[in-house]
Image (cartoon, rainbow, N blue to C red; front, side):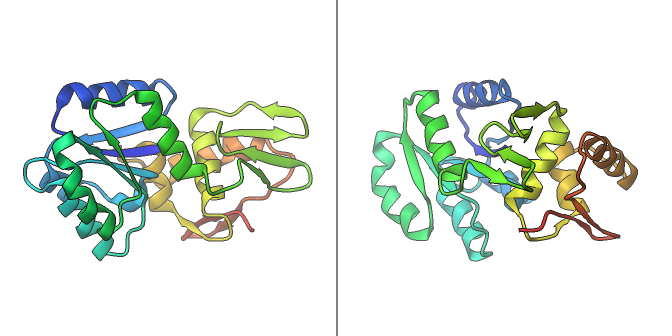
Amino acid sequence: MKLLLLEDDLLIAEQIRDYFELFDHRVDHFANGLELIEGANPSHYDILLLDINTPGLDGIEVLRSFRDLSIDTPAIFITAMGDLDHLKEAYRIGCDDYVRKPFDIEELEIRIEHLVRGNASEWIDITPRYRFDMKREALFDGEREVPLGRRERQLLYLLLRHRGHTVSKESIKDYLWEDQEVCDNTLRTTMKKLRNKLDENFIENLRGVGYRIDA
């Protein structure tokens, strides 16, 4: 899972990043709303965590700019007591939830899980033989868990999240390798490693475009 965090309190940001990175999630942190707008593509993330009062642009202005572009990535606002009046505007422009400072990090995790995966089935049957646990990002062959590397798990999760649609090579590379510059051969190598662990090939390659798993 990939989280985009706007928070100018570095202690809170560090707490969030350290907790979620323990579970192999990626957290990209910005302390300035304008820098976030210029430096991140919100459609490449699973959740937006936005403080309301931040320099450059505040969280409400950031979310408004995303919603104006029809980007519907779920958004949770991080608020102080004095920010509650601003939540009316935040909900009006499309926020999904909020947590109030100080908050319990496990409460934040529960709210994120509800938004990102709560509306979808935890288990996805890929074929009569294979199924995928979206919460744990784990692939099963019958009752046996198939051992996958981190990027192989992330790749399957991303394709299944967009099941029935083609995911471009550029989107996959950005999701798996973050800000690293990688070539198409690196992606093909990762895909080959994944396919070598499968007895059924349910991942379709649209040459020159991307990959998909049929609905």
